[in-house]
Length: 140
Picture (cartoon, rainbow, N blue to C red):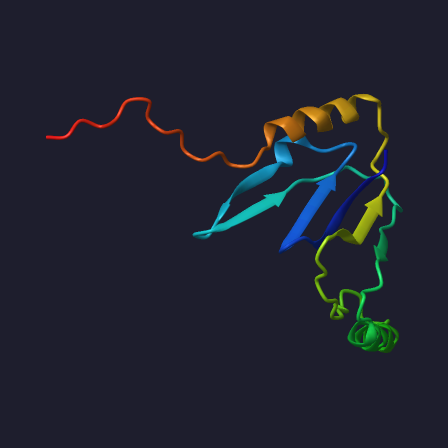
């Protein structure tokens, strides 16, 4: 099982990431701001690994293609400046949960990491709504 993540559209934006050799102490899943949520973790990789980034062509591709070409031109123009950020516009499409796919190989998977991932997935769940009291409050 390779490591990676999918980002795409539902009625909003949805994301899902997984790793084969995750540092359990790095897992962060907490509230952010009044209505937000922040998540993160570290998946161990060997030296020399690369990301494979795949994008599904949108239903209305004109703007996407134009900005992707501009990004490619900027990448060539600033190739001598490591760290220069290249970006492009891509519409968020409904019912397309893996519109953007990122993959990588985790470091030396020992067979235990898949079990660790399963435990982590169970441990990091959606926040539950507060349970209702079983007895009504007494009025004074």
